[in-house]
Image 1 (cartoon, rainbow, N blue to C red):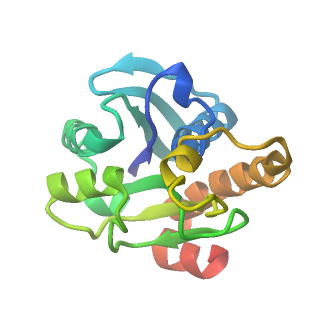
Image 2 (cartoon, rainbow, N blue to C red):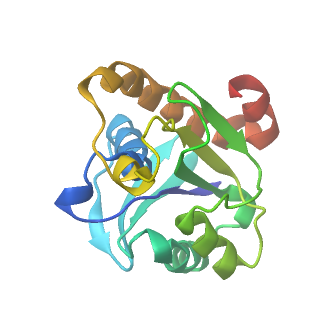
Length: 185
């Protein structure tokens, strides 16, 4: 069984550990737990991990968020991974900081990374993990908030939530999307 785990984010030091790059942080946490190492490859930084008889191809697209679909489609095709075995980790403005949601598909909700994936796959039906980043920002400051660094006080919520997301990925690969949703949503 082979899975493609996609952490969405933007490349570059200025985006490291920002709210919008939480997908990269989750991918890093998963790969670190499972003893993998990222290397630069086509359209993404890629790591391969094995766990419980499963192979995980973990990517962090280097295409920038708006073109994430190019990397997802390329790696799905290259590794021959079916759509139901991909898992996209994405930041979610509409969810509070302490919430994660697992979904088998759905709207891009205005998220450019999801929009790009949907366009290239020709469907919005692919599993995803939405990582709540909250929406505690002044009117007109959404971009600054999303691209902003986590506040020191937020890290007390973020660190255990990253560990939970690693568990969710493992659960997705062992018991499937429906049972994972029942367990973690």
